[in-house]
Length: 451
Image (cartoon, rainbow, N blue to C red; front, side):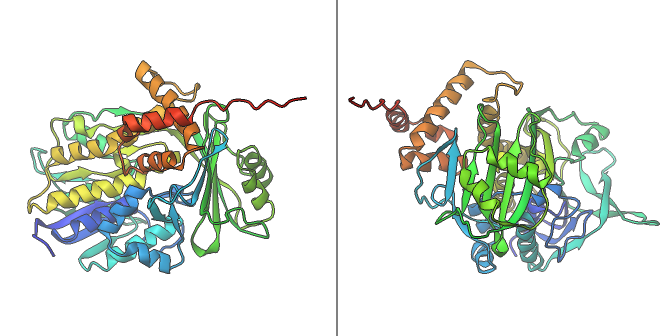
């Protein structure tokens, strides 16, 4: 155990963000208490409090590295347990604008597992820390504070069921990892603080998922995943991936209300409209393990905590409770992992983290991912938002880059390093990269034939 900062920290929410936060906190507090409304320990299937866990959840390359930093050797443990390894640029078959990108092994690796299985692995590692206690099947009803509301002192919780009495868990620090439905914005106003500014984009996104066991048609070859990315001409896409237990997971999506049907025939017909015919050919020969299930995602959301000048001491907000980006880009878990590493590094100073400083650090982590994907969201004409000249130039360049990546694998690598949050988006704007993109995105002259 490192330098102790306090006796007890309470983590609100036992999902992926909560597990990352616990890893960051455990060496600095005598006890970490995780509170969640669901049963957590021993659970290996989707739970009520995480409905999106029935769908594909991706961890980008930067997130995989941060996760390994927080939980050393977890990658090899998951591989030993039957979770396949992937490379974002090398074993993922990408289709942009209906065209397949060139592939190259780039070390942008990650382990693929269904969300409940990933959560189970993380919880098992957290349980092994020794100073962690789970308070399961409890509602979180509020915070306790000093009389002047300047500092949070604990959490009010109530066990499910009749007769459950509200109790207070005192804490030297409280972490809100409850996701998009976080009550912190309401609690801040009730405590007399400024309302946190919010922003987002109406996407009208809906995605449906179904699991299969492959039959005689295996479309993957040496690849791990096949991804069709939605574009303005066809605002539909999908992710088809190998996962734990020898199964394959297929999540397909559409924006602006063009949602995949949940009846098996309609779902399959939706897949047939996509750019990768090999997916359709595989699933019609595969054994379906369940029926499609739909999840609606109306808007992206970012809460600008970094803009606040006053904030109660001993309260921090992380993960989806701060930012819920377009899930198609699979950024959320990676941002949570990077935020947890930042928290751990602050705690290594031996003092309680300053919330304003932490809010600013989280803002810096979120900024590049948010700006890139919010810009891409506006490439769809039906999505409302301000399209500046700078954004129009960025989108035009990205289209050229995607064309160039169908011809030059090194551009695919650079693209996926940025998409994987390993490199900042500005890395794609370096003069040498711009020259390569422009050279490889020129129209191919039509070949003439003599009669």
